[in-house]
Length: 125
Image (cartoon, rainbow, N blue to C red):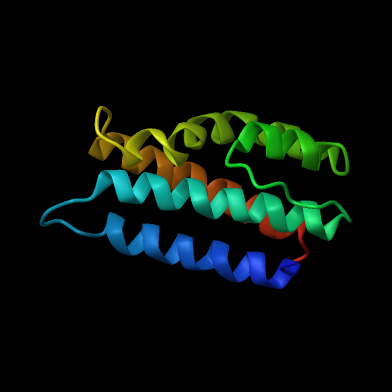
């Protein structure tokens, strides 16, 4: 089983990836920015769940992860709107039929940064 630190390392890799991709001006990759933003927060929520003694389930649903973490740390309920914004990017933009826009990517980056900062505080980082 992965440790809290391993989940954090993976989350940080996704944050760095999203940031690097968001900076591209030529051939922007909004789908990938949004996906990595969602992945970053998913992994931070799993790290926080583990930090509180829970076992992270193999799911991508940020709202469900937020609910599970909320059983141990009720303060995370205030992160719901950002989790909703990022939630659909786990799967939706990964397949044909839906694409993220540059505006979606910008909003995803804003939500990721806000949630990342808050979740890192909850982890004592």
